Image (tube, rainbow, N blue to C red; front, side, top):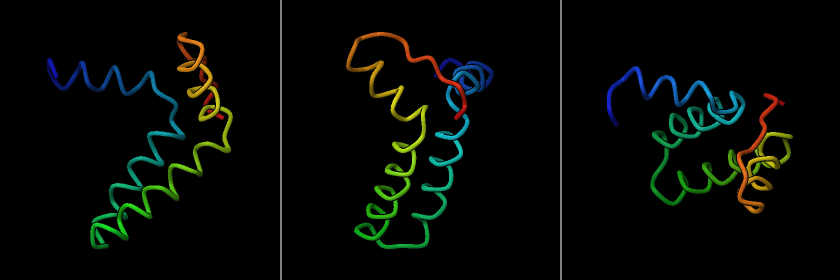
Length: 72
C-alpha cells in the first residue's frame, strides 16, 4: 500500500455493493468463531453473485478484461 489516499482511490473504483458486502462480512465475522465466520463470509459472497456487478467481475476475470461495474 503506497498510502491511505491511494487505497481510498482504488477502493472508490470498486463496485459499492461489493465493498458494502465485504465490510458487513468482516464486521459480522467478529461475532463468530472461525468456522461460523467463514460460513457468514460465504453467505455474503453469494449475495454479491446475484448482483450484476458480481457476475460482471467474474465474467471480466474469465475473459481477461477489466469489468464494467454499474453499482447494481
